[in-house]
Length: 418
Image (cartoon, rainbow, N blue to C red; front, side, top):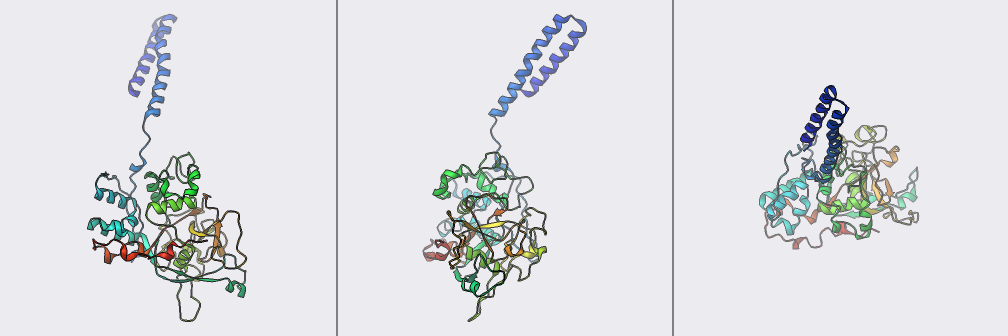
């Protein structure tokens, strides 16, 4: 229609020119009338085409699921090339649905004993490989949590406010959740799937939109992340959005003790305080290993960058790049009377960000707090998973696994934090 309209306009214009050269004003007027009618007609057809055309299918962006990246012997992360063609899934075929979940990075759900037993052996092994590549193991043990507010010179009062907390074995994402990963959640209707969301926040979910009013992180546009930032950590998401994403993929947000333990990697010796690192790489700040104020580009960087700053357990960017939501309330583990009192509880955030200036705020122990509905430019998140909530490689071939042997396992990870 567009080409036909254009040809008519050109033909009418040619007729007007020819008529004007050889005829009187009346002939020109009669030839010009069709042109005057065609202009609004062409505009109307263009408007109708835009109004009736279906919205773009953002599932077909050509993005591969990004479950995570392992750390090979060379120290450089393995990068997965994005898929150029989306698979077509059969909603009535369990194997096809399982493949869809693998492609979305939802391997943790597939590895639940009740579901894993019904998977094909190759899909079960693929899910286990994805888990191993995407998440690092944090072993069971105690971690010493220090008060959220410390004196400049550490004293006996600070020591009295420390708390030794036991942490069950768990998996923790090697990388913060990226824009590419979060896009899978958005495309799958995560913002419309209300069972994923805390019931108390249901009235506010409609407000969790991007710059153009589409469901999604605050700084996205038309339901999509800015070009070139697919491997950057997603930001502009509230605590509730992070928690909903975690449920969607079969995980959860880490607790404060879990996050700290993954970073400082305590070493316990008989009869002594745990020996804990100040930073994931050691006890001395090295700004070449982190994305902080003055040592980075002034914005986020891809989650695979700065591999030298990785923790003992192979976890990237626990310090710098973006603050990270945890499931704990701010100050919950400070046993002193100097806890921060707020009208609405704040959620704990950890790790510092690309715009963090003070080195004292970029340590494994430093804790800050933020309202759980805030959607800031420097706050992201990563997910955790209790080790006992999924099958292990040893159980992967046990078709009869049903989860009874895991009853009660990981109870500490599901503790209600006050």
